[in-house]
Amino acid sequence: MVHVDGRFLDGDPRRLEEAVAPACTEPETLLLIDTFEQCRPLEAWLREMFLPRLADHALVILAGRVAPDAEWTLDPGWAHLCTALAVRPLDADR
Image 1 (spheres, rainbow, N blue to C red):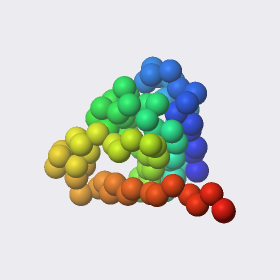
Image 2 (cartoon, rainbow, N blue to C red; image 1 turned 45 degrees about the vertical axis):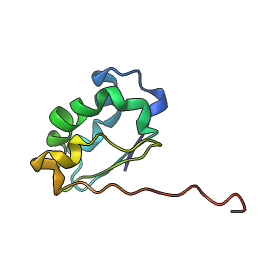
Image 3 (cartoon, rainbow, N blue to C red; image 1 turned 90 degrees about the vertical axis):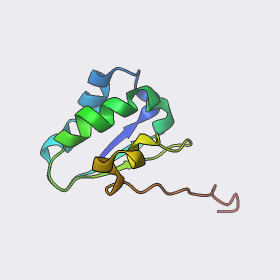
C-alpha cells in the first residue's frame, strides 16, 4: 500500500510522482491519496499522465472533502473504471 497525504504536496506533479513512485512498480498495489482536495490542481495530470503508468491491477482511492472532477465520469476511458462514493461524517460518539 502506498499512502500519500495531499496536505504535504505543493501542486508540483514531480512531488506527487516521487511520493507515489512505488505504485508504479508493485503489481496489485493500493494507492491512497488522502486529503485529495489539496491536489485538485494535479487532477488532470493524474488522470491523463500518471495513472495510466501504474503497475497492473493497481487500485486507487482518492479520498477528500470534495468530489472528484466530472471528467472522471465523462471520459469514456475512465467512466467504467471509476466509482464515486459519498461517505457521511463519522458519528461523534465513536
